[in-house]
Amino acid sequence: MKPYSTLFFDVDNTLLDFRAAEDQALHKLFASQHVPLTDRIMAHYRRINQGIWQVIEQGKADRDSLLNKRFSRLFRHYGKRVDGPAMEKKYREYLSEGHQLVDGALEMIRLLHNRYNLYVITNGVRSTQLRRLRDSGLLPLFRKIFVSETAGYQKPMRAFFDYAFARVPDFSKDQALMIGDSLSSDIKGGYLAGLDTCWFNPDGVQNTGQYAPTYQMKRLVELKGILGGPGGGPEFRNL
Ligand SMILES: [Mg+2]
Image 1: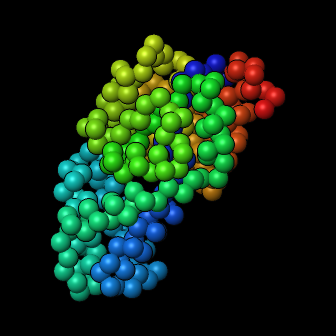
Image 2 (image 1 turned 45 degrees about the vertical axis):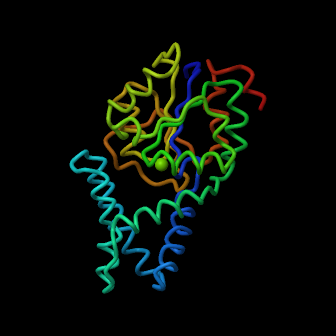
């Protein structure tokens, strides 16, 4: 166990409950179109969206043009023509209103921010992510927020991590830890960038990925043990 000084956190489904924010935004979007949002449509949307983000993560296609099509594709399937980019814009506005915290996230970040240099590294839209972090109370506890939209790269790309490292004062890879829920972006990206990684795996799913995290936890509170173990900050052992 290393004495870490710098912690990089993912946002969605690590600190903020993206599923809750997404559900709320989709309900508002469908209500605005006077279309009832059924479980079947919701599941269909998740399939379309997951496919799109897989392509984006692989760096194979332009992110904005794909996102601008996700709602026109979905609504077309149910016989309604909508303006894709306009719907996307509306959806992002609704999404930015959702800032439900993952259990224990604010308490843990409050605890950590005086002892560690905390950074966010997130794939997403800058204005959306900043607003959600601000409204949840998390924003002032982080030194900087790195958003893929601004960087021009996304996790798991090595370039996104290098972009962040270049903006962290006195950065040392050996003392940094990447914490996130996604094997394909956080754990793979952190590993390829040369960081130790901590996989937040609340549902206890099996790791089917190619990259093994350095640590794994089911609840955020377990970070205390991970950071406060042998070689970790001694002040942490009694928390
Ligand atoms: Mg995530």
